[in-house]
Image (cartoon, rainbow over all chains, first blue to last red; front, top):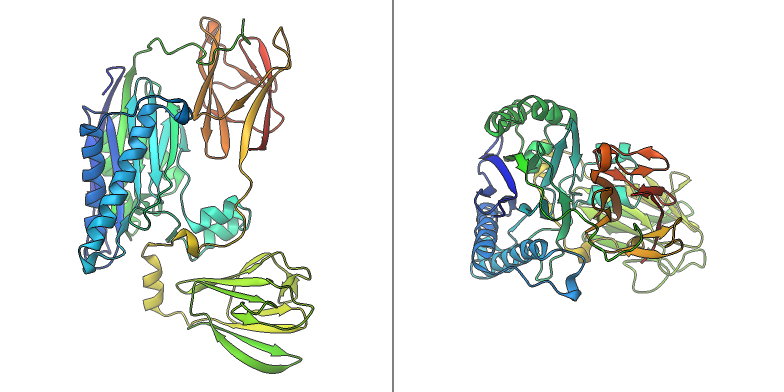
Length: 271
Length: 214
């Protein structure tokens, strides 16, 4: 983990009020600067197997394999972001392998949302409907876009906001680990500021509480990640707790400005 | 199982169970529901079913698809909906909702891309910047990276980040705390989403932002 960012984080996963299993899993490594939430699905206990494999494989890949070297081929994303993407792809392959070896685990899958701090940025990778929010100066910003049928139809303007809110097929996701060998991972890179808060969660939280309720908790208690996470969990359970609930809150205490402050293009536009 | 009942001039012709994710309707012989009538396009429409919900999609047919008399491109079907395709009609018979099916709906399911709609995905757009003043006026760059940093250290530096199809401008540092502007307005410290045609000013350089097909 880069010493440029100092942060505190707290994560919790909970079965909720209705389900018989907790199929979510979370991973936090403060020293390496990464956080992951996975929301598993599949019969029997296969969902929790899939999410657990995802967390383990991502941790293993980030710890033991080298960051890809910068190259012209992947100039779009930084090597750190590609490293995170590769970790998710490795996890996908591991889940498919495990499913092949056990009939009861056929068709198991999981969502993943992962973030890792690097220099003064955060690399973000996600698949499915688990989300990453950033709370900055009182404003809650959902950085990830759900891979759900509802969101897809909204984007294509086949649904109005009204239709999307009332849709009965909210539970249909269009991407997940464990479905196919080929996996498209959405990637983002964002600048990090001191006092930023990051919230990773499964839909057991975002499906129970709206943005206003989440903002209220973060603005009041965000500086204490454990307090904020426990309060969000309690509110989601009080609202019905219809699904498993996973929450990780990251509070950035300090970003040390590096040499990373000039135009990274060799542009003479600004002379 | 939900089904469609095909009829012509008030006569019922055939029942079609919605027994797969995508049931196609059209004049071509390989459709699941083949209607041999010149008013019907080769590939006219499709019904997509996920668990207990079915959706009707017009596939760009020549004469259009009506539901209860109104033209639709996509429509969430309700039991009793009356679909008109050419001179034929199809009535949708949905499932009775029970507590059990409602409960099942809560569970997350994932669909494979092949099971998704066959419509073309929206055209991917890429952001471009074009310099509007100074010695570099007229020069252009494509914003293909996840994040592009722009400006001059000590004067003003900003970043443009890509979130899938969208672009956001964000302040990094500036003399006297001044932030970049969009259409003459300082953006402050929150990232701002860019729209096609916006004029940005970073480190005294004016830049036009455009979205174009990749």
